[in-house]
Length: 587
Image (cartoon, rainbow, N blue to C red; front, side, top):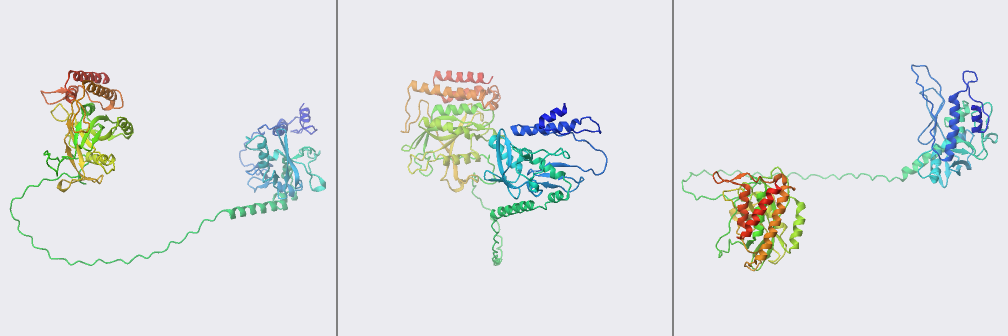
């Protein structure tokens, strides 16, 4: 049965290997032969087929040097022949070696390969390379993969020795030496249509122990010499084509100028110290300055403008009118935080003719968390574009900012003065007219400082024209000026429109502003109750005030908020609804 399978596969009658000197079939040798044939058929059909690898045997101890005949495929698909004991030098076998061995003759269309019913031929050069479709390949595998990728672009690798066949004849007696003989049944007979596999010729050279074969393998042939010479010439051309790095220019030496000796100044004789005179001296007020020896959180007492309207040298440069809607929302916003500072912007209009700055709205802003939030506040820049967009829709301008000092006086700190100077320069229009030079003011709200339940609000700005002992120099910003307090008039029934007076709004208009204030207050309740500021909301039941006059913080908030609204019964309803909303959001 085994011989019938063998004959059916190979189409020829070859002896079946036997072992132990009897007729027992060597099953491993038969499996190897059948596997090799199946692998060859798979390559022709374009199917990947795993190469048969017998199980490696482990040898223990030093049993002496054993001679082995095996081949190893290297990176460029050449074959390493090992016919010496382990540790001996190894020599590669290429097409050039087979040319010198006289089993290959260079020429056109002497090499062929087949893949998925597609066949092609190639030229073998005298120095052992392959020319196919105007491209030269140094190895069989490179040529075989290039051809198979034209059929299947996804082909990754191939063994060219088992795929490419030789169609020509050898040099000796017009033979390639591939005819099978009884003496060497391992030699494959040449097919006139498909040629002989180059792997068969390679194994013939490796297995030949003659002096001729050893000389060919050592590289003594002409074709091998031409191959080595071609590789060296190509390397020279490649190295010559590479741009040479520019030569480093030596740095010019510069002579150091001679050291100039400073003239020695003569020492003047010291004058005798006069006796101290005991006389009364005028007490001098120490000015408040931003200095290197002061902390950013050092409080600064604002200088004041003269109350006399006839004064020209120290007169407040503009008037301020703040609507009840803006002052009430500032007051309410500052009470919501526990003991940390809040921040927001002020919107309004500017009348250059009357020098009147009308503040109409307060817009709370988001803040960034910090460990020092109880003494300073940092604005979240992401909230600024949304605030500016709201102000522009109302055809108004950003005219100021506000923040809180929860548990300490409403005097600005050095950091507040620095921020105010920065804001004034940021929002200041570089125009030549008074219409374009809009003032920018700051407000500080003290919700829980002092004994008065109504929160105190301090207005200030930086007078850049300040001078003398009261001059203030900010080391951090480089702006020179004096923090000065500003007087602000709070309107109850309307806003200032820039004509120097106050327009009395109708009851309907006032009611609309109160409803808008209520809506903004409800939105803040949600932010501090269940939103982003939940981590810092105040404790409504916490006690505030001196002993005997204690109130809860919620009661204190209601008193301060009611004082900012116009007097009417409707306002009590708004304050009560806001307090109820806070209790609901704080649950």
